[in-house]
Length: 151
View 1 (tube, one colour):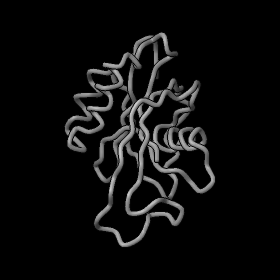
View 2 (cartoon, helix red, strand yellow; view 1 turned 30 degrees about the vertical axis):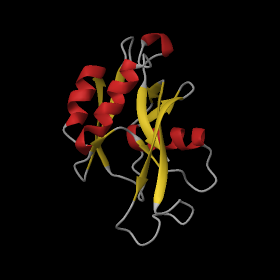
View 3 (cartoon, helix red, strand yellow; view 1 turned 135 degrees about the vertical axis):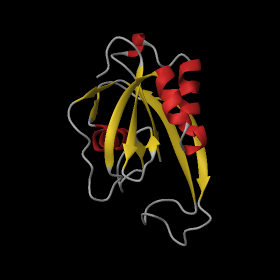
């Protein structure tokens, strides 16, 4: 899936979301464990090198009356964004309590920005562009890079 040129994986869910793979930590998980699990669940990818964290943001949920998971911060949460080399090892895992991924696209960086810009107010496209502009999506970092969000 990832060859000698930088690329990004974008997932399409049954809810018609188009996004980068990522998600929230399970209770007791390290960040590295979260990244490995989310990549496998949402994109069928195995992490093959270290994550290079390059951005963070916070989100406040004004509508829910309780946290999604009891161990998650609420109503605010902090998210990290990183890139890492990965290898496709199979289809998305699609666990029962996660997003239902119906397609995974491996796109050039330019195509990923265009594909993602139509969704999520372009937020994920902007993250891919930032990683590109910071020089984080280069072939010297490994066999390809993938961005994602983790909290």
